[in-house]
Length: 268
Image 1: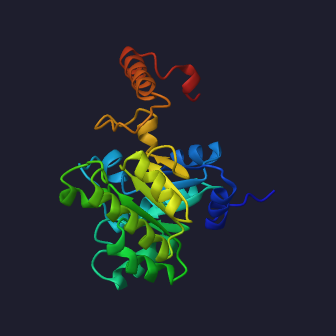
Image 2: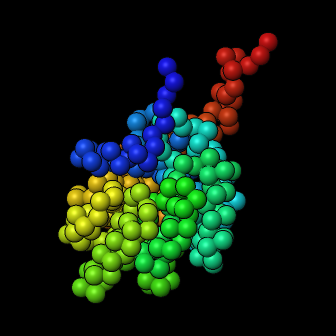
């Protein structure tokens, strides 16, 4: 039987039916296979790859070529999930021609089915021009990591009334521009509930409370594989770093002591 990959229409139907939408990041073939086989709805090839895989302090250094490389790997490792690829910093902020070209590359070269970009009112026209190419767009408002220097760090957004009003306006602008869904990151739970109630498209929360239509987390965070930071909104569902270190330690011991390779791992 042919396995059918989820589409944006399937994701919209999940919201309509009241079923929560599940999203995890993935950046390579092995993790994509595991996440996809577990039944995730959406795999996000996030520019968070810069922090958790490449070791950058922020997402800002990530390039289009890096995003295409990782997206291709994830697509090869998945069969069922909708694949959304992040548009990295400077891939859509300069002008709309660049935005269209780079969004198209993530679809044509990377194999993604949708792209994600950060911002609200300020990127509404860019969202529209990409959607007009028949490329589905996921928005992202609230704490937007590509704006870290303006925000003064990874700080919760929307606690002040003016910020909250701006985020509500951003959400409406993203929806009106044609996005099929939007990420709400690092905002108070009550405000996320307001945003979710004010738009018809799905909201995907990360540090935004229970009332969003779905949730997204970084795969390395939930498995205990990222020791650089530990955000409040992360829940560790498994801690495999200790298992990996123990396995490597045993390998080192066996090689140095002459236990590996044994006859079982040798050819005759």
